[in-house]
Image 1 (cartoon, rainbow, N blue to C red):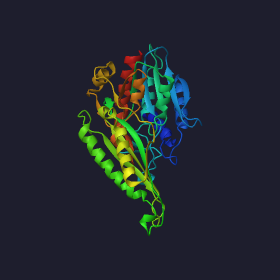
Image 2: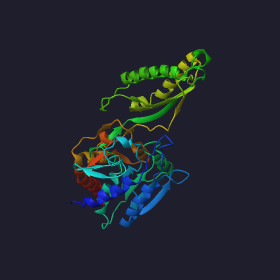
Image 3: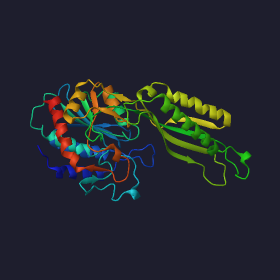
Image 4: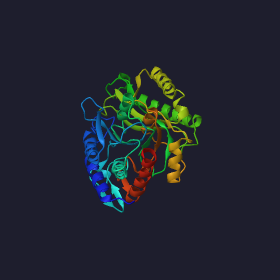
Length: 383
């Protein structure tokens, strides 16, 4: 059954026009309240029972739980409402305005992952006049791109509960049943500032950070050798140097420097005390240099995720898509839903290769197949 895509495009345009960046940098961080209120209004008009769950004390951030039908079991269609920061000058069009060209929908979050919500609503529309034997739950969360506090709040509350959950991250409609975990960390080096004409007047934090960077490269190589996992396309843990800040003037010895990085760990690496090992390596540098050196998490780590290959949901997704469920290198909210007792997979329209970069887009050709796929899943779990 074909769907009128004009409403989907209109809804996606409204979602993209409503900014909801989440970031570990306070200068970028925003709330998602306006986005979930927009979704809540649409879902309420469709007959869903709607609840907003506060995630932040000031109310700027919230989860949406929208339920059609009642009782135990059922299916959750889950997505996050936040986006990453963006480089506006590198976009060919306004990232906060939906642009349609070349059979593609361009805009911040079009594929990761605001585009999932109009598709999920269109899939649900086919069931509004049918008596559901088990509920359909559409879930929209806050802060997936930074702290995952939205998903953590759901686990703390013990809800929602269903038989199965589909996390609609962009996978080109192929099912993902396992992925790496992620740690976002900061290393701060504290030296002593002084006049640059005499290095002995201070302790240059940038000099010490250079040694830290070398140690991180050695550590990264060791992780690759020790924790390879052929189930992943990138078959080893990764360590990405994200940003660095230090010093204040060319003629002053740098008194402090801070590096932010992430670690994406395979399941075996996550269980091997990797962070404790890194802490020991950094403390050895601190003792040699005399500098202060602190390793601290920017957000709580996200554990790796794995759903059994023999589970009902994985087998259904493989049958419907014709793709064997595989592994992903990126992290999602899937382990949190799995912790609530739901069989969980990651599967949605769009490509992860287009996420987090200028000119992000969702292909129009992905919309109807995504709707059809979700409708079949809803029918299996809710009728």
